[in-house]
Length: 83
Image (cartoon, rainbow, N blue to C red; front, top):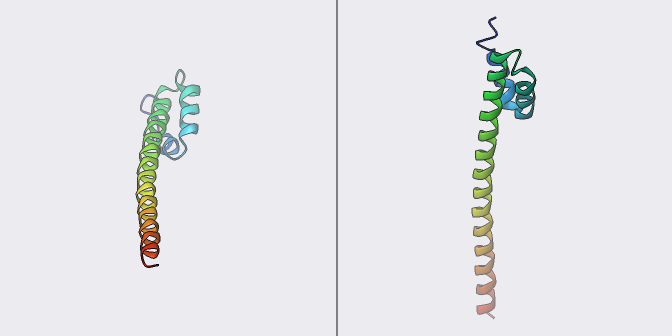
């Protein structure tokens, strides 16, 4: 395989384990530029996807927690008013 094109397998590895992709890019950037580019792209995309997923999960968790607090507050207020 031509080293200038790179192997897509390194991109997949970099996507699922971005730290490994970054390390491979650092090690191979001069002597295997194609493979390094694929590993680096995979690591970059994997890191971005991880960050986006984390932000979405945090937002959903915050909304659910806010709803739970509102429900608990309403329940406490109703119990106090019924006394």
